[in-house]
Image 1 (cartoon, rainbow over the protein chains, first blue to last red):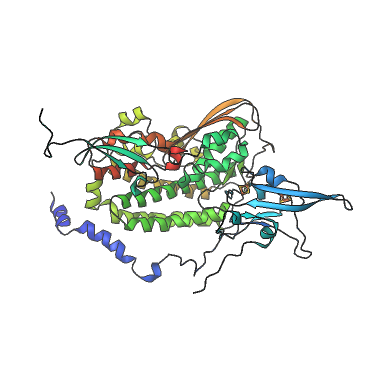
Image 2 (image 1 turned 180 degrees about the vertical axis):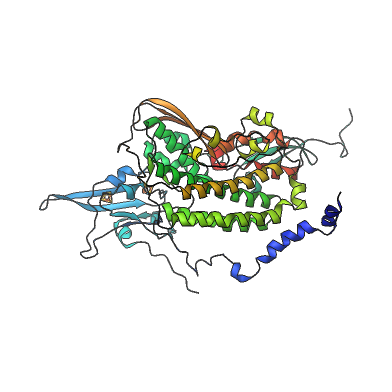
Length: 153
Length: 370
Ligand code: SF4
Ligand code: SF4
């Protein structure tokens, strides 16, 4: 054993070097934990979270043209929608739209398939509900978005 | 024959897992013990079986891509890459150069993130609690890049058959570059914390040795094979997605023990950062999607495509019967194959070392069970 190695072994240099790394992170400016829910994370623009059915901001009418493409594209087949033909305009109109988020894997295939950008996955990520039924979203819920409880601190 | 007394040694059978925290998920190992020595192991797997291969038979090709992310969820991008390449080979298309370069960047970032997760949990298993927090902090950067690029952090679904769905966001390349600048000093920090640490060396040196012959006999690939001294890397041996354009080293070890595997993976992270930097610097312009029909209906035939996932050779064997859905999808998961070598490595080891040996294989149970 060389003298240098002997010295390093006796004086625990390897362990102290490691401890040095640990102690360098003691100042609070190095803290990178997020205090959720008091401090909310910054969500990326493209984040695929809660689904939303977009409406025309002026008229409040849904943008969905009931083409059923999203339901066909979904690998889990969890989108179910119904439509009715409007006799006057000869156009299909959406009547119901259900989206079972309990089975959704947020892959984004449905929003890619939508030709009019009516269905969109948004930045909302708080999707918990107390019941299983609560995870099946109807048209109203999809248009308004989830309203999770916001806790105050 | 005299009755056995408490002085005689008897073999004891002990269950480790499936809820044991250091079996990295839901692996159950039936141990045959002679005192503290392991005399034999038996793996019970399947607790996380979701029938991924069967699901593939009744989904269209495009629909199946998000599912493969769930196999090795720690390195979802590599899974998606493997399956997309297999489907592209069936179709006879190739992703455009820009898409390939972005794929390489994401695949290498996922390699770093997978190795970081492995480093944290492996060290946690053998008693070092601190590195876990550091590696997760670094991993967070990669997760953020993924989130901004494709909208998901873990099960990314970043690739589509024929290219990519998403164009890069504005700061994508800068963020990748700055991450590559930022990572090596952090790895040095881990070096100071761990590499020379006598406790860590004591726990890792000469533990779980698997030599090159055994590796080949078991079909072990990835860092475990390289730690045994075999310079085998699919990115070099059969380049895919433009890996032949990048300059990188293949780190190898000598003894094939746990410590060598640790060193190999540490070096792989540095090399991965190098590849990311090269890909970011030479990013070509152009389209990100090849001409792929709306309804993917490959001609009848079969392909096997394998990629170098963080854990080893990840292969997809896809059989097409000419319809929109695969006739059969077989996944060759690296974790599953590497796990076979557990018995060979664990025989004669101490129970405490078994934890280190399971950790060093770097298994993800989602991939073992599929
Ligand atoms: S995100 Fe994927 S799983 Fe969820 S509804 Fe859309 S297509 Fe279906
Ligand atoms: S794809 Fe879009 S427009 Fe068509 S039914 Fe779905 S949400 Fe409506």
